[in-house]
Image 1: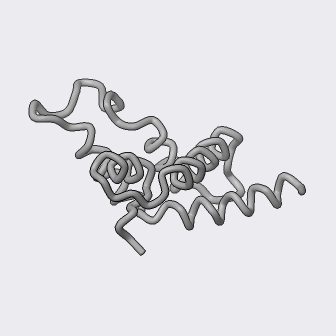
Image 2: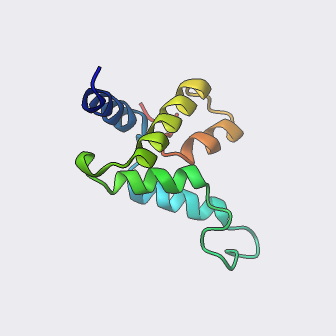
Image 3: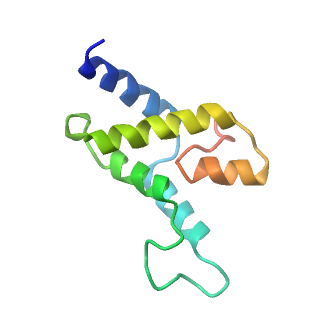
Length: 105
């Protein structure tokens, strides 16, 4: 398999797996990071690192992907495959933090 072919397959699988758009994911990550006292002083503090990576990938074209982006994409696909479509609160929150809402068809 060539690297381009692998990238094409990963791109397609990633976009099948991530079923939330960037605005939905951003809203979820911000709501999840806030607490009763509001947002922490550092805007990245408390926001899931992998979720930030997903937002970054969603803003790119396939030809602009870096090796770090490909790693994020693999991690997301693997996580969703591992957790499946669990809908308990903890699993759903974890899945949604990477852009996959298990309650969507």
